[in-house]
Image: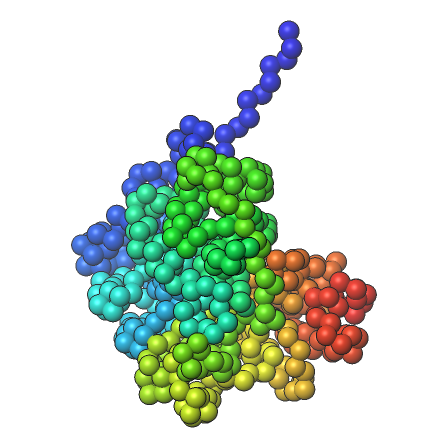
Length: 550
């Protein structure tokens, strides 16, 4: 008799019959849908206080409404991952407000500013997914915050959790003179049809969407779970190419093109099909493999497209072209024409860190010099729309008074940082202030340097700040200094490029936080001295000697 073959262990895929929870996260979701926690927050927790919160809600379902406990002050990075959750948890929360497509008007921005001042000790950060994040939120204040947000058409539902999170879109959708297609209607249609639906409130893990017809490709489609990118087919029709399976963290992968042409009116159907495949076939057994990129890696784009068309859409999509190459800068910083004859003015806060007072000032400036419409970007920047040409210079000057630069240095323009150890329970090192200090010092040391150069600073391996696709990506970790002491520092990734290659890790290349500025200055000077005309930092890294990278 032939030996019995061992049955392959299931990955928790619902479509294959594995419906029983295989870990604590899946058990919690089966016990109660995360969307149901809103009622308990309103009726119980906000009235009885922090100590009344069920742990399964506190560290699980609260995320379905944008709430995470923040890190207790004074706990150093060496204890991250070693302490139990209740030891790391503060009694305050980070609260994420989802801003789909980055679209705001002055009334909404003023409301965000007021919430910051009244409930969040003045804190506010612009994320690299166009959201606003607060800190120091008390559970007792959440109902009032929700009332204020919802009164102006904003909210926190599915801002976090195993859900379809914020849909990022070009901040200039319907506005940019050179866009391929206005993706705004598709962003709104997906949101209106599916966000908050229990059909997709229990996914294997988070699901990130991008929709854009922008020529700059500002929504970084290469690293989203699903992305729709504007294209023009052979007959001159505008629509979208679909990409699936992008993501970073500890196993970075670029999204794969499905090779299709999606008409604008089909986008919501294709989106529903892709997220349904993730829900039904996604891997739920191991949390670290529960992203659609792992399913795409195993299936390949051809099989994924076949399953999408046959099992979920019920029709075949025509083949479609690939999008044109992105513009050199994807951030929409500067003064540029709109299709209606007005101008937009994009400006750079310091690594996304703003505050309530500043948000209020931006709302006032948008109303005074434009129509009041404001946008956030996926690069932690902001844009004021509808500015008459004669108002562009006065607006730029007014923004500069608030240290918001329309023509920033390379270092101000291209430095990004995650939340870091100041508030995040996963972080190992400080990031925001470190990145701001680095940026300021590089401006002093290298005032003439003007080549595009992205520096992304992350407090842990999870890549919230996209370290693997930056020119200089800095992953926070503890390192040993010259005295043999364990201190905050970074592993260095060099020469990452969206859609092309992930950053190179040179053997032994790490730096302490204190030595970070000296290291970056050194490698930038090497690049500037050795680069050929028009040669990018990423291209130089691929040919440089390791000695020049250290």
